[in-house]
Length: 439
Ligand code: DLL
Image (cartoon, rainbow, N blue to C red):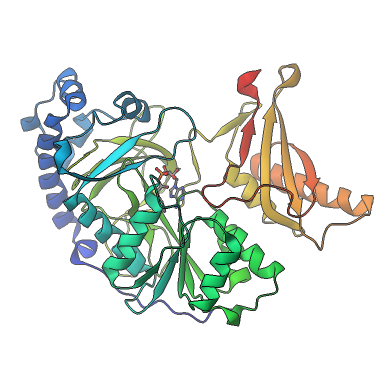
């Protein structure tokens, strides 16, 4: 097993402010942000509709008076109507990876890029990165914020980057071996593909020097963490972010790995009930809402992320005082309603990881023949469990059925498919095909 121990290092003092200091800092930066968004016609109008003038926002307690911003709002302002600075001041553009509709463009000034690199340096340091380490980045480099965001974060720490970018798994593994890479950065689903390649090619752990990994960009489960850690003999850390808010660097795990520390000096976080829009108490799941405090090019006010998670304001054993967010259990727009029951893909993942003989590669297909929802889960078997015996296959299906029912309360059709037959992902995994919209 892994013998790597993460030193508990804190990147900068903003991570350990007292609550009073943080509240004062956030209040001051909120006032500045409210001033800055007066340059954005969308916000100017939204504020005036809500009867808000900048002077009315004095402290953090006034936040709730401000209007929310939604993905639809951003789409409507495509491509650059949310800019709060002159285009000449923009240093870089990225885009959100939305799977449908118009993408969302985001912009950064030189200063925004500095702030962003610092935020990534924070969570990378919290999760073990030292200047002497080399880090392989297997995220897409392009409009997606993952590649470039993490790239500059690693450099900010003073470590070295291997910008492998996503895809070409044999080459990724070759680089990891030949370059004796210390840490891997990618999506958890791509890590699974890399791990599978290592196992299939009988590459022993000691041929690699990999010690830990930082995964983000998509939801994953604790079971998936255990699986990848066992398979690869490394420690895995979770980090979270979204392009509309900045990209990666909104939050990340420290060595304690009990929630992701949110950089509250850069973002105000709220957790709300998505129906009533009222705050939910700490520990209760709700939709995360972020207000940026440092962004110049595209500040954002009360952005409804659709990501479902809970918040923990208790100080952490690592010494950081920032609020921690739980894993994202799903996006409210990824939530499937099957026969009236809410189901997240992560619940299926959780169930499958409990059943031996299945690989954590799956696809959920939903259809509505005869006005009744039918969900089919395609599950890949492992080489070992792949059998010609009908009885064994039926037993495996029954186990999966019970595990899924235990977690979701629903019965789904289980279709066992042969090893390596489902699509592998180099970026964000696509786990659901819903045919109902078309019917
Ligand atoms: O995925 C930014 C990012 C890149 C974060 C690399 C971490 C590492 P978008 O493409 O705009 O930005 O997608 C944002 O991805 O709203 C979540 O639904 C999901 N997401 C990101 N990180 C996590 C995570 C980047 N650790 C959307 N756990 C977000 C669960 C995540 N979901």
